[in-house]
Length: 172
Image 1: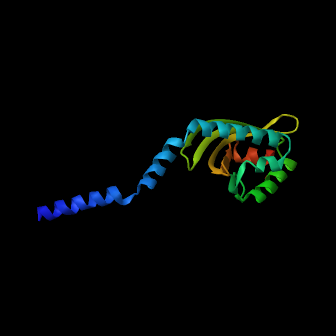
Image 2 (image 1 turned 90 degrees about the vertical axis):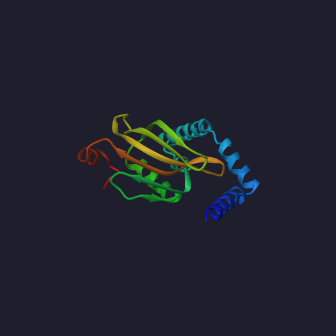
Image 3 (image 1 turned 120 degrees about the vertical axis):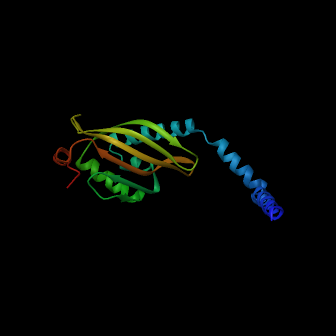
């Protein structure tokens, strides 16, 4: 029985070794070697700069262009917003009735060629420059048309619920 077991084990190993063709192996090795987290970080930093610049200018289309077409935002105290078109509307309404300036501070960024996660903090200001909210966020980034864009965006305030609800005109 031992010789049969050796044969089965040997056949299994051979099958495993040859189950991926050379193109698959080269593709896997190439994608692993091509991804550079520093390049992804630089792209995300640039996108965050564009996001802040657009938000601070009241440009909801510019802000929404930082999101993938199938993105989802998940803010505290409200339902998720799905899809870039709905995000445009959400951001436009938020800008009209709430904060006029945002400051993002990126923290840790990790991931691979398929998805990158970013942790950071935000601060929101009203039209007089008064700090009206601060909190933290996590964004999942994925590539769309060769650019890193926000795929999932979740943030939550550091303010107690009662303080946030009193201060934020965007929450009804």
